[in-house]
Length: 490
Image 1 (cartoon, rainbow, N blue to C red):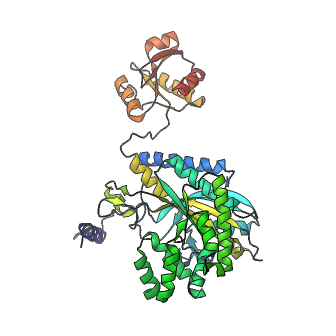
Image 2 (image 1 turned 90 degrees about the horizontal axis):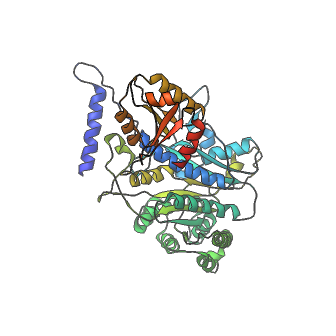
Image 3 (image 1 turned 60 degrees about the vertical axis):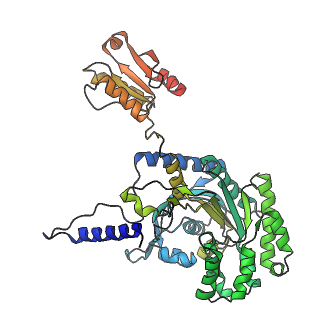
């Protein structure tokens, strides 16, 4: 047993002891966040807001509008949509005769929303929390409660144009966030199903074998093969043939080569997928992002609702894990060398049949979308900025005084700045020392300080100091409009 495992078991015993209470019979309340969740301090929230703003800005640049849906859905809405991952859905107790579950993702609620409102085309983004009864100690940034940032295009359009735009969005976001080198793997569910068929996989085992292939980014091929053969009953010959295909990577040239593959070309659905893959890469060339996109036959994505193109963005690096605080240790797991595996940071695909599952008449609305892995991205950004000073407020001006008994004047000037739309604050003391006020500006990053003094009040002016350069100017007391210009310069 490793040291970390021993520490984990000791922590569990201490927690159990605290819950049972001492000899006096009093139960001790355990002050902690629930497993797989965490609190975020002001610095962490400032970093999160920066990431959110970058993502939302990209979504809006591509013409998306936003919606919201309830945090819980009828259980039957979510049942049967996620394949083997359905066991991770949080079920709630009966509420007034309704069986409810916390939403697992934002895609199924979106499909329900489209069917319920008879919407046949929309380009939307949705940023909200989702819930998974998962093991939160599997990889850095994997929680039971976390945000998803989804972008989806619903509607009947010419093939691969919306799909290419989704990949372009992933490229733009990861490039702008400057997370390091990355690549985007693409494949097609029709190619996978065609591959399984020509390799001898029985139809009823397509989905379960697909879920096993999806583990290739975490497991060696030999382990994946053993699971297919020993646990899922696939023949060794079929597994070996699958192994030959899933080792292939390339671009448009690979799609062209596979169209002439003696086995794969016998599958009509595989040929349809390969033809679309060629078309997709032609659009990606026009978007100038083919340097980051690779056609990878090992990409499977286990969710049952995918019907066509699928993709996943992966960072090309292993990160060094910071030492987590005790309350945060259930949110990540470190490797033996102290590094952490971040995993994929975005993923998505085409799901043309999902809306039809909810429509009473089975009317289909073709959809394609992408989900940005915000928690994993945040873990990387937090690590990158851990040693840097991050502003946690947006205050532009601190209203200060150089002498005593000027609280009323400070309050009056602060109100004038607020009324003018300027972000301002003051210290909540009647007679703070000027040095204390200036130190507050330096500690919090406030760029300007408006200093009131007896002489300034007699002259009807305010002294405005640039905290960084210590440059000072005297402004008329009613100076809200002027300070707006000064703020913009700083």
